[in-house]
Picture 1 (cartoon, rainbow, N blue to C red):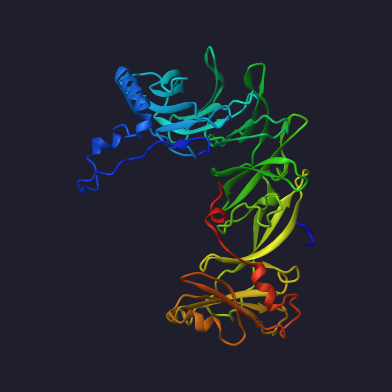
Picture 2 (cartoon, rainbow, N blue to C red):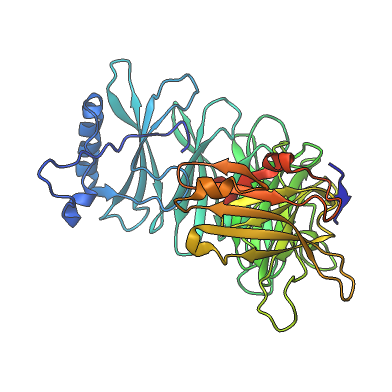
Length: 458
């Protein structure tokens, strides 16, 4: 397609097989919610060992607030041999005034018995998140814990587990987000930590931590956009030239923007940051709910930038804001280029990849006049933009849910785009209105359902 310049880890198996009571009672008493989950029989020795440690330390379970690994007990394959040789248990020692949080790691021996091997202590009110990544390059996963001190203040710590015990690789305070990824393409993952200035007088920063000499040190930092209200998503992805990058999306001035960072010559750079504007101007956009995605499945992450369409309603009539989404890839210089354009109908749960010549010549309006019959529709109009010119409808996409949906999908001129047990999506295209560079039989190849993965950034 023509491009236009646009300036749980699988390693952490769930152990919490809660056994439902056969007494018919659907809920336990509150104190029962904090009891050790009843594990499968093969883990009875582990369960007994955990209980002894809890009794000795006067501990209860610590909550894990976010992330992919929130289970109280987690089985780990740290060395990648396919065997889960370690169990991690997350506790709080109620009597400890300092460092009350515990990560207890139990290793399974040759006799298949688990023994307490490592204990990591931390401060805070709870554990914000836990992940397991190889940041030392030895082929063994390391432990990364975000200790939650308060609502917006966390301490991020990384630990490696050696024969002699646990060694802390790094510890830093942050108030936004962090990401673990291999940004310098050396096969070893690094950590990017984002801080937002809360005083209004400083700068927002992203710090880059790399492993060297037995510890992880901050080797460089780069500015984040000014006046952001909080990073709501931080994901790794590829630029258009294949380079790895971090995409940090934040709320900004009624919408959102994305700071795109990459490592060049060992230094972290915000390649979309505009020094004069003080923010990543090219990625600033109205927030329509569309999130970053590899929309065309080419391995490159795209940023969705919406453009409002002209209204098809006459003056004085109630209008609705319809828009198309320009999906933009970023190159190493921070320049955006459009890879494709889509129209997203979140109300009906679908999107359409538009031909190149559509965005400048269409407008869109809903028609729910037959919704009482189980038929809702979106109408695409050919829009000239000249004074006095009337937009001409040329394509209608229907969402059919009524009991007669099969019959309505087969009405003259309609073609089925997708169907399941409850819903049929159909379309009717009038190719005589204008040369829209699309045949009716090709519509299904451009029609997709909006999935949960698209609708939520991670």
